Amino acid sequence: MAFPPKSRIAALFAMGILPGLVLGTGVGYSVAKMTSSATVGANTFTTAASFDTVAPTVSATVIAKAAGTGLYFASYIKQGGTYYVYANATDGGAVPSGIATIKADVSAITTGSTAVSLVAGSYTVEGVTYGWRTASLTANASLTAGSKSYSLTSTDNNGNAATQSGYTVTVDNTVPTSTDIQCVNGGATVGTVELGDVCTFTFGEIIDPESILAGWTGASTSVVVRFTNSGNNDTFAVWNAANTAQLNLGSVNTKGNYVTTAVTAGASGTASTMVLNTGTNTVTITLGTIAGTVANDSNNNTAAWTPSASAFDRAGNAMPTTNRNETGTNDKDF
Image (cartoon, rainbow, N blue to C red; front, side, top):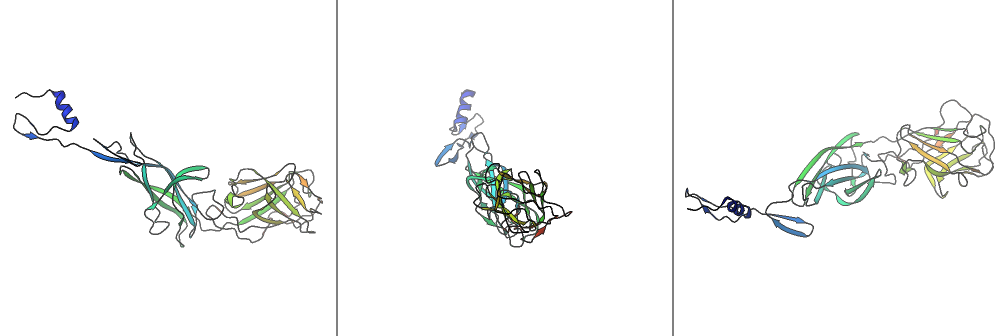
């Protein structure tokens, strides 16, 4: 019996059409054609073997609070609060078929939520853009503080799936506090409101900058400070750069007589500035150009700060509005 050349046998095996080649031993062999269907978008095709055998990989994920205006800082939520799960992922393999689904198991945060779908889109948190996000979820009404774990399962269009775990978010149920207000001289004369004077609001923990001013990241930004004449209890508050809306820093009673008319700092000329320091938990205001009539107060006054309930921490816990008196030695302000 003559045998076909090796190159022909190899070709027949590769083509999948060798139908029962009978060798000299009398034993018959058959080869089935191996095929696999794959779908990419709206197109379905069949190949001799699947091009994509590698599951997708999540490269980045974070959980961030969803409610309110303060949405800058991520990785912190509170019990009963709303939140989103964000992710970035890529499909693997030489010819990836594309990601079909990403599902989050956040049952340690929201009971029963073991496979919550993420939706493709473009979402930004802390300056990072994510391609997938869940709908708004609600944490359990009673949830102990501390680290909570969650996982993500990603599946591609060829059915390859992988679960990645060990991701965490911190539950913080403690309301932030106001701990101090200090206004110090940065100009030429102590006791007079001037360009360069500095007022510092100190919090008990990091405050989300977007809860103070929408769109604020904490970097130095222009603001206007408005002083109101009220005898020996002149007050001031911080407004946006356009001087059209008061920011969520509350108000300060200087307990002194620093202005005799309505006074602005930074509405024209040199702007006042505001900056967040997450290392010291402070928001610092540096006064800009003064417009209006000021007076010199040489007394040692103890200012009182009434915070805004609209400000809140990284987890979304709102500030109490209890007055906080200036701490330390009773000295001259501005």
